[in-house]
Length: 287
Image 1: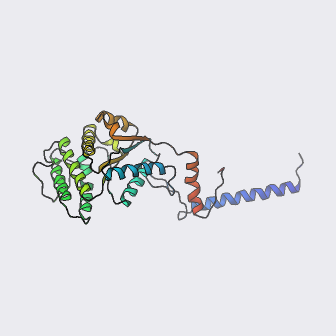
Image 2: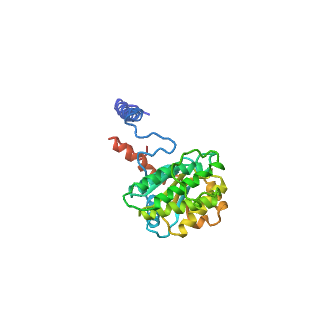
Image 3: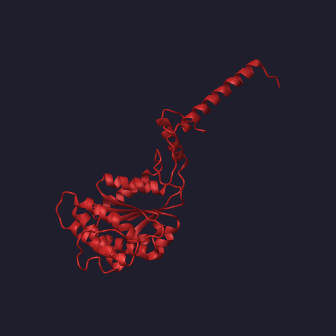
């Protein structure tokens, strides 16, 4: 094989070109101020791709629920790292932009449903109370929440002060199933009065114990029957599908269960290419 000086020079120029491209990319990715990629647990990516259709489906369902029309809420399930938390965040951001009240919660392990719900519900109801339309609904919902908070006698991890008066017989029996129905109905009536919707956005729902999950499903089912604008959008690991079915057999008719997996190839490429191009850099198809 004959190696000429011209061939060596051409190869050298090609290697220098490749080296410069690699160096440019290295400097770009190592620049903490410019690198658009910073993976984390539930951290929104610089470009959300491949989920627009799901966000729109959730938006349609929430609009129907706010209007008092029937619609199934969405429950996303899948392995860790497929973007469940990010998708749920995109949905509740869109709901808030439409004027809905979002109660966003991450269900921790070893914590009861009442302890998880009461503090953010208090905050959300106070926000709802500031909407400039007079009415008794929010005040009654706050009284229901005060009665519901008495469950701390049974659930010792519920430690929150509720400064509102209770209403005898409203969500104060100490029975989770009955009291949660009262509370969710009161919240739905308050939202209807304010011409909005309350969305319980719960991540890691699989950590809610089955009896408490059953109580939540039953309460939401009753609100749905009364066509009240209060609903659940949630995400969890794959076992959530079976857990909800075991908790209440009609869960599959009340919710739409949507599996989440890896992005389609074109969406995955866009998720990388668009942030790079936004920084004034380029990336080849084969990269």
